[in-house]
Amino acid sequence: MKKIISLVLFSSFVGFSHAGTNISEQLAQCQKVTGDSERLRCFDKLGKLKAEDKTESSEPQSAGKWETRSEKSPIDDSSNEFVYLSAENQIRGQFGGSNTPFLFITCREKKTELFINWETFLGIDGTRVLTRIDAQKAVNRTWQISTDNKATFYSGQTISFIKELMKSKKMFVQITPYGENPAQTTFDLSGLSKAIKPLREACKW
Image: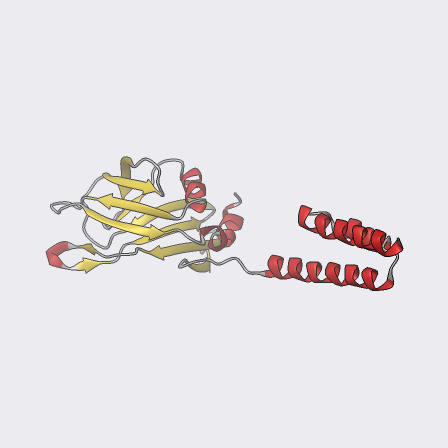
């Protein structure tokens, strides 16, 4: 009879493990097992579960293809953070050349900005940029052009837009440089949540 009760308790322990019962409750369940061999098996099972939990929790989160850089601000000594990523494919530039666009997210003097460096002449004023995040509906809006006329700055709610990217896998982008045909490329957003942590700390969001 004791052996039957012990096996029932051991089976209950296994069931609790799969149901997510916490370690202290599982330990108490093992202590109720009366048979020596069954009790040892119960504690052995508990030890393996703890080891598995530790392994899973210690696995580092990947930053994907993102690169990061930090530097001290010469203006206010704050930490300027740069998170950037190259596009998955090149675009046609001026005079028949090919360029690789880069997506930048920056925190400079505690101000967050997002821009795409196209490395080709875009025009002299704001330009329309079409973006599509994962399977969402495409959005076509005006982005501001940089002073060197080769990059476009996101001009909406920048932090909200970045948070949307953090939850996504890819972003398709299309732009029409001045006097050129539309150029398209895609950015692999995987790992942004990991890569952007220092930047979020620096800009406090």
